[in-house]
Length: 474
Image (cartoon, rainbow, N blue to C red; front, side, top):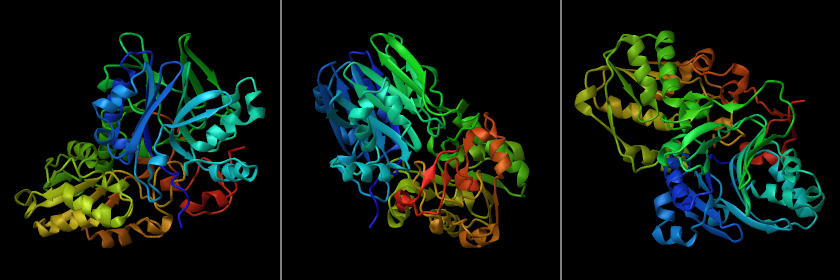
């Protein structure tokens, strides 16, 4: 039996001080739909009462005009969540809402708390009753502890109990609080509307949707409080000595190309990765084609650098969802068949450079390659705009356990044979890091390198993290 569905990659959006805060949050969630397709929700407040609407499905399936009108208020936070192989219930849909001795509170979380199961067991042993199977609920139990309430800054004290990745939005009757963990795993940005209302979002694409201007990214280890008194910032947590853990997979796959994440435009980063890939792995070919849609930016860079014409091998449906985040292999295979159709006349007899952003399990990539073969491609040279994924992620991306990763314990030649391509080349680790702005020590690349920014004292399965003894860097 799998442990609770606590490992997810999500999108956050919040608005403070606008009469249409709920409608704006609804638009922000639309912009972040690529970050979560399992459930969506909004919690709002008028300064006294809280209003909540959540549900399973896409944003346009969860909300309608009536539900939005019912929860209308000047302050709101919203959340979209993506599918995992764990439980999928409306009870786990966020934002979560609770009431404790400090009053009502709602919370939305992007990331994964690797010590959540240990904390939960401790609280259950002294009589706490949990309403969900989400790691996020642990934060509220910590906040409600009487001894924590007596601290000068209860939230700061609570956050220092957490280990792992967390960008958070917390809604109180009088304020909206945004938090980014001390290592900065997940993105979170502050923006401003023309009227002066403040917004917070996982990606800047959401600011574009509501005509907001980005003010800045939250710093790792920062708490930003937005209230009628204005915007206040304070630091919490240990000094990380200049190290960080910005998830580079945001740049490779998850974030939208129009967004600025960790100080870089995602599209330009992917183009740079494609250029570097062309320098590292030249090949004689007739056409550079992307695996849609994430491979498009890198394929553009590869074509520009190599001088090989850019072409199109697939048509795409935008209604099939993202195959990587489907909960099981049969669903992923069906999503690929529904999403991609080969343009046979464009590829028949051609020597193709096929550019993919990443290869996780390999089975869906092999299906795409097989479709090109059936269409008559003469040669297929696969170029992957990231290094081999050899290690599981414990910080919010639902990579399977390492035994299911195609590159784990396999050589590049082995993977090439499995994918049935004429040649295969992955972008080097150095080439990947040369394509982004920050220094290498600011990124988490553990899924490629196995160098985790939080030490794992013993190997663990992805769904048994609670059995590991973990600690932050000393």
